[in-house]
Length: 458
Image (cartoon, rainbow, N blue to C red; front, top):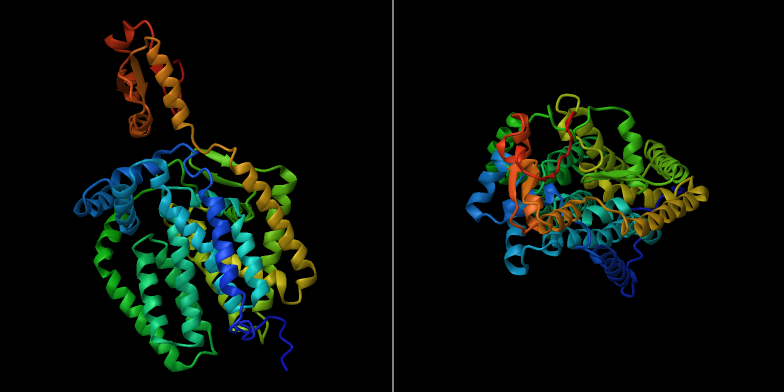
């Protein structure tokens, strides 16, 4: 008998004819959908979501051209959104539908893989953490590709692990499909496959024939991705973080901030910060770091199971690789945004660490703390505001209805403002103020001024 405290892949083959797994998957997915679809259109849109709308409204042949020239993203999410908008309209609900569906499915898939790779308890714990994580909920209500990329990254990594355990043709096709889709959804897909290659290199248990089939699959994925490579090179060459206020230089402090985001106690979204009381923020971050550290320590033991080493190498590798790259190109690592892509995989790691291993005695209370922090954060999330674009438009509407007919606003804010504002005020770019105040403004009795950064002397 093995004394290994972590269960073998497959959860000890407990998935029998009357397994509760299908019912639990449906229940968790339904609960996730209830949370992620609740007030889906309540938050105001913000600039990045407007970019998604503008690109996805273009013709199919124009989407890729626009992305290469201006937006630095692969096209798959925008192609899908093009059809969603055509079928459901251009409202906030439609714009966020793909993310809400992907986020809901992710929770069910976290349980499916957690219970299969580890055991039922680990699957439940992992899915519960993901279910109520404010960080994941927030991006599941965001009209951007991150929730979809997180779902595909989870499916890609776990399909790889299953291929190495029990190779099957259908699983091979699924792995190639979801991995290629991931690459066409977000450029971090390259880092996901890089982490997989690292795991494949260090894994000793898999037979050579299995590794060979996976390497051939990776070659096929690379061939399928080849048409996008030229666009990636152009986007990378033209992108520069200079002047991008949202890009922060690499710092080891980011790892503590990531822990805050993953614990649901602190992260950035749109033009706002989701924050928590200092004690909860410290406790949530420290508990998450401790659980992850416990799993990492166990993964380095001589007889550590492949399932644990897989969870550690995939979830952490997807973070470490882009973090290292960010010392040369800071824009590739946004700790409060792109890291969502590895979050479901980290949930698998946390679920395993909290229900098995040498740390189980305090792992379960630690997971309970994360669940409590998540529930508290989700309750607060629905009264939190990530953007005030709609409120600004409402204010402009009331002022212009009162007779003020000149509006000065940043050019970059115009698409978001005019999504909500349908008035007839004359709109001028904020740069107009660089001249000194011209004839139109000098002779106006009143004007509305919107600025992201009010200049001195105004």
